[in-house]
Image 1 (cartoon, rainbow, N blue to C red):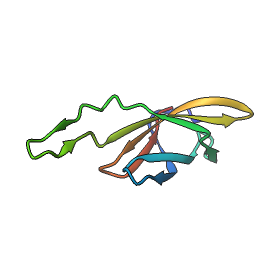
Image 2: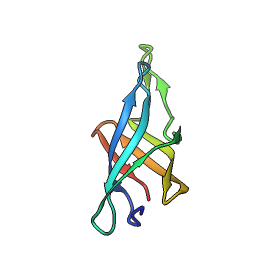
Image 3: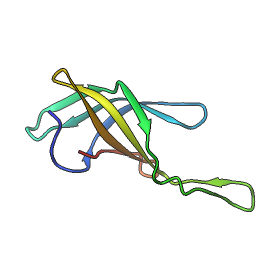
Length: 97
């Protein structure tokens, strides 16, 4: 079962695309009972409220290092939506439960 605490450090298997994009494929975390849970991500949508990028005078685009994903997984034969946050500076994934 999905844990109830907030901002759970999460292992994520992801695919890095040639354009720099990221596709989350699977997640693994420890639930409230101390059990390791593994889920396959069936679909995702990048939800970037942090897209306040801008272009430097040199022509370089600057964007945020935080990426938020809305993902669909199946838990006990029921589809659920979860949110993942990726901090590209630290290389850390968090499950926002």
